[in-house]
Length: 159
Length: 159
DNA sequence: TATTGTTATACTCTATAACTATA
DNA sequence: TATAGTTATAGAGTATAACAATA
Picture 1 (cartoon, rainbow over the protein chains, first blue to last red):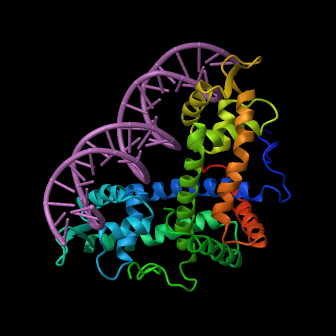
Picture 2 (picture 1 turned 180 degrees about the vertical axis):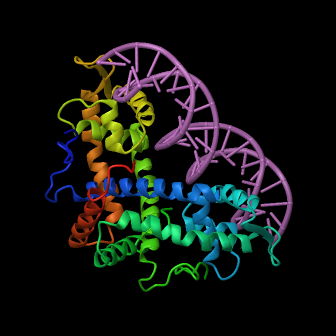
C-alpha cells in the first residue's frame, strides 16, 4: 500500500543498471547485518568492530603487530588503536613488546578473549543464518564463491 | 610474508562456516564500496547517505513523507531528519506541507537535486564497476539475483 | 491516546594531521 | 630519513528519549 519497490527512475528490472543495484543491495544487507550483530553483541559488551578485530587477532599464528591488523582490516592504523584500547580494557587482548624491535607492539589474545570468541561463534552463525534464511545451501555456496572472488580479486588498497 | 589469508581458527576453507564467512565478506565489500563512493562524492559535496536518500526520494512517483523514507531506508525517522536537513540546505530537496494533514511533511526533489542525480549516475556505475571488476557479466547477474532474493525475502524490520 | 516529526544527546566507526620513539 | 604507534581532532552515520503539534 505504499512504497514502490521498483525504483521509478533508477534502474530497469532487466539488466542495464545491474551494477548500480548491486551497490544498493550490498548496503542494505550490511546495514541489516550490523543491526542484528549489534543486538547480539550488546549483552556481551563488545562492539561489532571490536569483535571483528578480536577474530582477526585470533586468526594469526603468532601475535600480529598493529600495522598487520590495520592492513588486514583495511583501515588506517589509528582506527586499530581505539579498538585495541577497548579490547585491552575488557581484558580480551594484551599489548606485548616485540623482542626484536622496541617500536612495534604485538597484540596477544588472552584466555578471556578466546572465551569470548567461543561464546560468540554460535551467535555469529545465528546472525548470518538469519540473514541468509531466504537462500538454499547451494545458493549460499554460490554467493560465497562470488563474494570471495570479489574480495580476493581486489587490490589491498588503492595507493 | 605476512598475514595468513585463511584464518587459522575461524573457519575451514571447505563449507562448515560458510555463513560466518559471508558476513565478513559483506562487511569488507561494503567498506570498500563506501570508501570509493566517498571519494567520488566528495567533490560534489554530498555524502553517501545523502546521495542514497536523494535517490530514494526520486524513486517515488509522489513526494514521500519522512516516515516513508525512514521505513524504506530501514533507519529510524530521526536519521532522515538530518539527511533531509543537509539536502535541503544544498537545495536538492524541499520540505513541502501535506494538503491533507498538517503534521506530515512531504519531501520533494528539486531540479537541482535531479541534476545531481544525473551527474552522479555515471560515477556511481563507475564505482560499482570498480568493485565488480573481478566478475564476468554472467556472474554479476547471478550475484544480483542472489542479493535480490536476500533483500526481498527478508522482513522489513523485526518488530 | 496514537502518530508525525523534531530537538537534544550520545556513541560507534573511521579519517587526517601532527607528534614521539625508535630504527 | 623512514617506520610504528600514538595523541588530538573531526565528521559521518545512526540510535534512544523526550517533546511538540496534530489527529
